[in-house]
Image 1 (cartoon, rainbow, N blue to C red):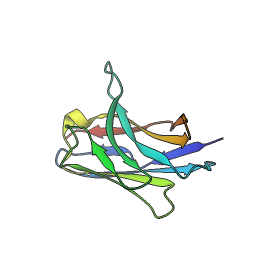
Image 2: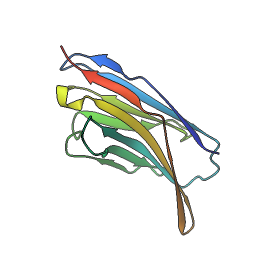
Image 3: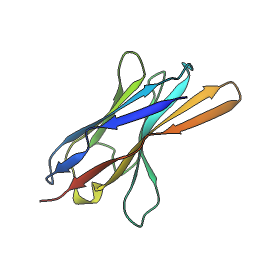
Length: 119
């Protein structure tokens, strides 16, 4: 069973920075995608950024230029460096992993970590 454990959320001031981490365990598939979604109260869950196991990245328009996604050498930990934070970045951030097994995919989610941007 794949487990994702997130850390790094908290309170930041507008213009500040936070770094989220997500460690995956229990996966055996080398072809995968890891990334982050976020959900603010009353809103749908939106993708923030993702990174494939071969290094391709994708950013939402709202995070492009301010957030940076990266993975460690094992490929099992994903980071989200968030700079120039805005109050509208306030949300619960969820890590996810998609394991690709031939024609099938398996998606796993972390428990979520709260990010609050406020002065």
